Length: 119
Image (cartoon, rainbow, N blue to C red; front, top):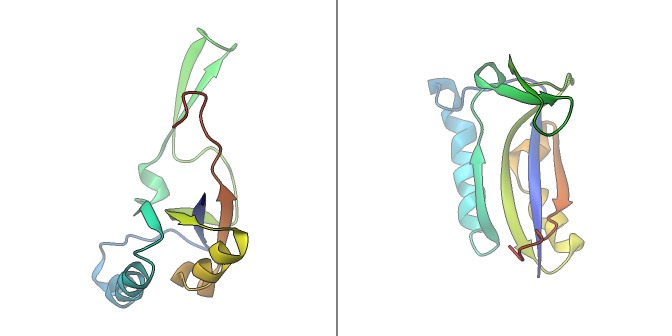
């Protein structure tokens, strides 16, 4: 089995707790129920205004620089993710096309790399 990160990109920031998001949240709940056997984790992200970017100048041990918001400038916003444990990319694509983000914008599938400690 392979674990893929399904990264959900949107054309704008969302406050998923806002009353106007109820319908789309029902769509995500339906996806979560349908894909429960392959979902290994995931979360919606708070708006980019809540982000803090950390950089260390000069490499390890250098000065820590914090900035408000996301560092990368992009036309799309990372709004959430799922971890999908599936047999292969084809199965990941079958699940990803059912994620509501794919209907509005994009879902990026990226296989996870094992860490040196085996996790």
